[in-house]
Figure 1 (cartoon, helix red, strand yellow):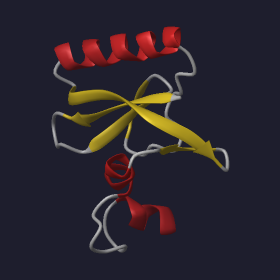
Figure 2: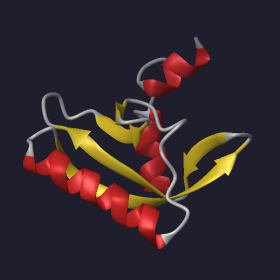
Figure 3: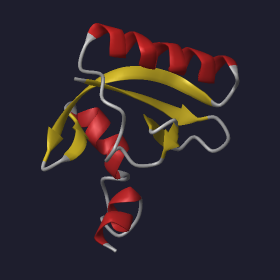
Figure 4: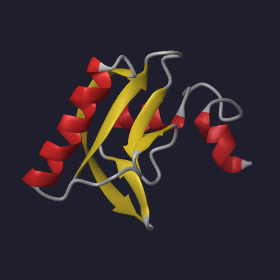
Length: 97
């Protein structure tokens, strides 16, 4: 499975394509389960890049764990969670709240 990720151009925040827009959390990112769905997400990313909404657009590997979408690679897990030095800041702090 693949999901679409990027960085929002205005503030650099890591975002994921979910439900017709760019979400700040990966939890419910749109899943591409086949080549046609991957192509659709790539087209969405290409248009968003051309419209100066996002940069560094990539399809990444993901899996569903407990009904929630999670990136597979460590780099992407870090981007999804936030800073690795403290659990009280970044996206991981929001999940605990």
